[in-house]
Structure formats: C-alpha cells, structure tokens
Image: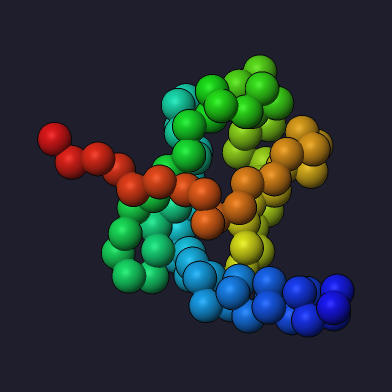
Length: 88
C-alpha cells in the first residue's frame, strides 16, 4: 500500500510540475517565471530564515525541477506553492 501511495505522489508531482525558466529574489519576494510566461512569487516574510537573511545569503540559492533551496539557510520552497501576481 505504501508503494502505491508513493507512485501516486510521483505521478501527481509530474503532472503538476512547473517548468521554471528564471528565478530572482528581491527584498520582499522570491519570483519565478515559468516556461509558459507566468510570473509567480512567494513572500519572503512568511519564512523566518529568509526574512532574517542578508541579501547575499538570499542570492545564494540552487534550483531543481521541484523548487529552490538555500543550503546555508536550511530553507527549501516548492514551486507548487508559489502564487500568481494579482493584477490591479
């Protein structure tokens, strides 16, 4: 049963995978641009490790197909949770 649940999670992850073409960080948000031209973001203030980090540490990230990681800060964000920018 656990093996089936694991397989279903992996299939779901593949179906919802976001292909990111660009990542950038400013003082308030971590931004991503998808290969479909969507700009999504996640608020830095929602993550204490990111909120208290200096700008050099915030720029020291790595990405993979699932998200962005700051190894020095021990923080990971999954692209699935990034939100679209609300248009005014």
